[in-house]
Image 1: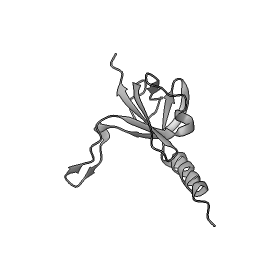
Image 2: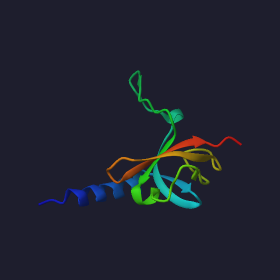
Image 3: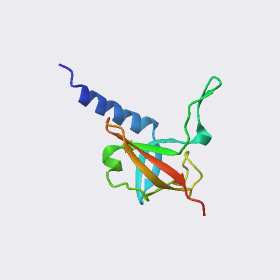
Length: 108
């Protein structure tokens, strides 16, 4: 019988390795999927409804993240200009092994 959990974990690993963005969470390099309203994909004439920047990471990466944690864009990042910082305003595990870190850009 196929172990669905093991297959899902392998798929998550492959997606993160090949499609994720580099970021820094509280001083530690991490990889995750970044979305932001200014990068919002369009489906025909309908917007997808992204309203807050979000970094989706594996649960084990998000384990130490709390409200007030800092996410930064490293040099050469595609998610935001280098040095751009975000506060974590919410931590939202989705029950699939992934957690969304809902962000707010830090205005200096």
